[in-house]
Length: 370
Image (cartoon, rainbow, N blue to C red):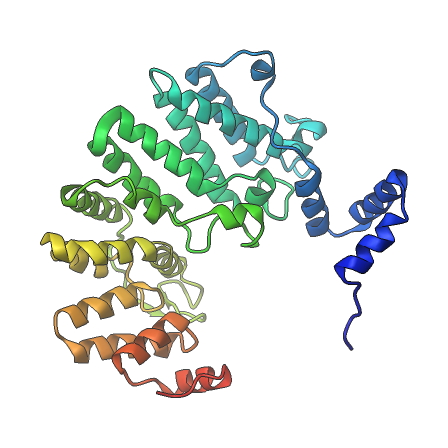
């Protein structure tokens, strides 16, 4: 049975009959009795922009070194669980401070960004790097009492990374940027952004970090140097290939029938970095550096038949004129993930045969079989 709801005009007409106290009471009842998600949405609407620190309120500007020290203490406390409290008897952070964690986060982020204009911005860069890393971790970790920590803090990771990388470029030139940004790109990039819900004011402002980096690279030499630094960073995550066996979730597993975490991580990494791979694919062949693409496509840190690295491999096979291999690769991907929209689109584009399971899935979605 459909739920009847007032339209905007009817809703506003009802509100017009309430005075300010009545409006406050209605909003308070929603806030106090509502679910955690509703409370956070109300807090996002009524909270002002994150307050600056006391030092800044007094007209003082802390040094980059002082800001770095404050950020290190805050991040250390959050990651240790102090802002969750109670569970282990941790009283190192007061209840009031725990409830205002997002204001502290926002104030520290604002100070770090301001200090990027200092004569020596390196401590500020380190501070902002720590906060971005914390934001990335908070998407998947329960460090604070929040349904969606990054959205609650109103922290746009891609904007912060753009300011950080621009500072590195100003200070140390393109070599400094590439040396620092490539490891950070691998650690921070996220296929679906950094908020948990993926919608709202913060999520709408997010963009892939790959595009942030691309805007800072001035010429083909910089792109090639980036690809080399990227491969060097991937090497740090490449574990020797273990003797595999099939695990219960469909991942190759070296454990006793359990979930293979390493395979899952490789899949996630391949998906998170897909936008970067697309940008490299657009440019490196024109820069006589296609060999880097081949190494990326086969890199053990990305090895997966269940991630978008399959799309890169397929497109490289097509570029080499090996249509049969391209068909085999994308069809194998659909065998593993018969409902993957990206795999399906590419298979249709190149005329690859669809596995029966994929045909059924997309027929149910209303897609005509090619």
